[in-house]
Length: 227
Image 1 (cartoon, helix red, strand yellow):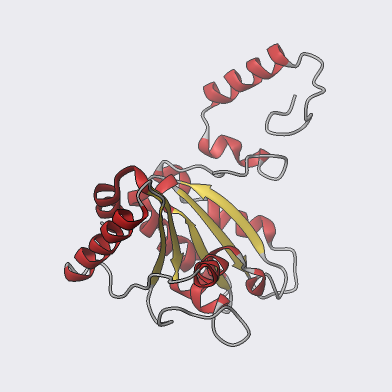
Image 2 (cartoon, one colour; image 1 turned 135 degrees about the vertical axis):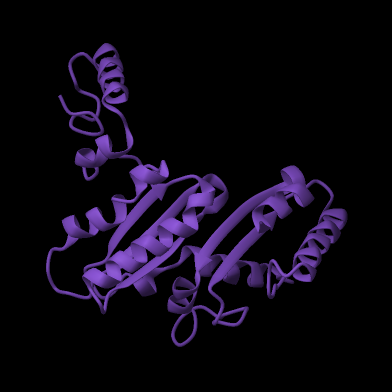
């Protein structure tokens, strides 16, 4: 609802709509982390950015859109940075997540799906991981407007659990019309999962194009398509 509202109210000037689940926000802020510009007890956080051609009018429109969503109860609180330093701090919360990469192992994922499916998917994956490893952690954030989500899975066990973690993260995607890759591609790590989000006909066409353009298989051999 918030995304639809800001897309309508800000039009083509909306340049970022980044969603962070509350446990991610809490993990990277607070003691030893980034300064939290908002309370740390909300279930979801969104970083909005608007880049228009008229700064004074754009700022006013931005504030009006936020105010309307506060009045409608779509959002509970908001903060508008007043300096470049405050802007940098907000983006650091979204982009600087070194604090959650330890302890290892920590498995990173990049998936995509229709926007309406995101909440269901996040709940399903987090529940499955919690059942599998009761003391585990799963942090989620992403470029919601682009249909992308990033996940960080920490089983909190000193063992190679990557394959099982893959199964828990990727399994729900087929039914939701999602993909095992969003912006970081298939590479070699997701080769075995490509059929999970692409049909045999699609993969056959990809192989045909690969053979046509690269008959000697010298361009990134073994990645995405394996002969």
